[in-house]
Length: 442
Ligand SMILES: C[S@@+](CC[C@H](N)C(=O)[O-])C[C@H]1O[C@@H](n2cnc3c(N)ncnc32)[C@H](O)[C@@H]1O
Image (cartoon, rainbow, N blue to C red; front, side, top):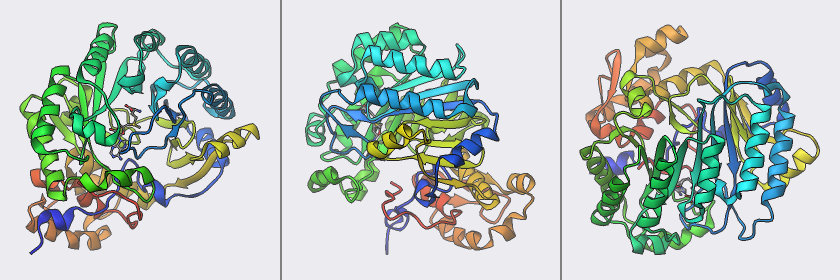
C-alpha cells in the first residue's frame, strides 16, 4: 500500500501562469509589442535585478553572482534602453511595481534613484501605487531603506529562509535574527506599510522542532505576510544544490515541516491563503481570500487582477492580454538584443480559448479551493461535465483519498488534506505534461 504522500507528491507546476512557461515557444519582441498595442489596461511593472554578491546554495532563481558591482551601471542603462523600446506602454497608468531578483539592493542609492526615475518618467505611477522590493537584509543598509521609502516604495519582502545556525551554515546564508528584526523595525518606523518574510521548508538539517523555533522568531518580527516555500531541488539546472543532498530531510519529514508551519502560523493568528502564503487577517490578501477576490499571477497570490504585467530585465516575464513573453535568460543575449534596438524577448505564447478555460479552472482551485462548475459554464459557454469528461474520471480517486469532495456535484471542494496537494489537484485540469524539471508538489 502506498501512502497519500507517495501517490500525490508528484512533480507539478506552481501555476503562476497557464500554460506554465516551459510550454511556451520561441518568439521575438514583435509578440510583446503587438500585445501592448492591442491592450490599454493599467500596468503592473516587474523589474528583475539578477545580481547577488554571494550564492545561497539552495537558490533556484535566475541570478548572476558578482562580488564587485561593475555590472550594475551598464545593466541599468540596458533596462532604460528596454523601456524605450516599449513605446506603446509609455504614459500608461502603473498601479503596481515590484523589483525582484537576485538582490535589488545590490544597486547603490544613486543607481536605485536613476532606475526609479527612469521608470516614473516613462510610465504613470500614482502616489497610491503598490511599490514593493525584495531585499536581502544582509546587504541592505539603512541609507538604502530610507532612499527607497522616499522614492515611494511602500512594501518590503525580506529573505530569511531559516534562523537555525546549522541550517544557515549548510546553505551558506548566515543572517542573524537581530539584524533582520532591526531592519524590519526601521522599515516600519519610516513608513513601509507592509512587510513580507520568505522562509523555505525542506532545507538540510531542518526538523520540526528547529523550524518551530524559527517560526517563533518570525512571530516576534510579526510580518504582515509570510511565504513558506517548498524547497525546489533541481540540481540538473542548479548545480550548486547538489551539495545539499546528503542532509536534506526525507519527504515525510519535509511534509511535517510544512504542517509545523501551517499549525504554528494559524495558531498565532495568520490566515493560510493557499499553497505557500500566509497573511494577517487584516492584510489585503486575507480580505481578498475571504471575499473570493484572490488571483494568481507571476507575483504569486495577488489582489491585482486587471493589469497587464510588463517585466523588465534579464529573464523577466510579461503577460499582456492573453500573451505571455519572456526575455532572454542570459545577460549577454539580453544586452545584445537591446544594443540592436530589439525588444529582448526569446519565447512567448498566445493563449487559446482552451487555455483560458483551463487557466480559470486552475486559478479557482488554487485561489478559492473550490470550483463552481456553473460559473465556468456561464463564463465560457461550455458544458463542464462533457468538456472535462476525461478529467472528471480521475477525480473519484482523489475523492476516495479525502483530497476533494463533491466531484460529481456542481461544486468541487478541496478538503484541508487536499490543500497540501493542491498543485496535484489543479494538475488534473492541465492539458500539458509537467516539465522535466518541475519540482514536487510538497
Ligand atoms: C529571488 S529570491 C530573492 C531574495 C533576496 N535575494 C534575498 O536573498 O533575500 C526570493 C525568494 O525565493 C525563494 N527561493 C529561492 N530559491 C528557492 C528554492 N530552490 N526553492 C524554494 N524557494 C526558493 C527564497 O525564499 C527567496 O527569499
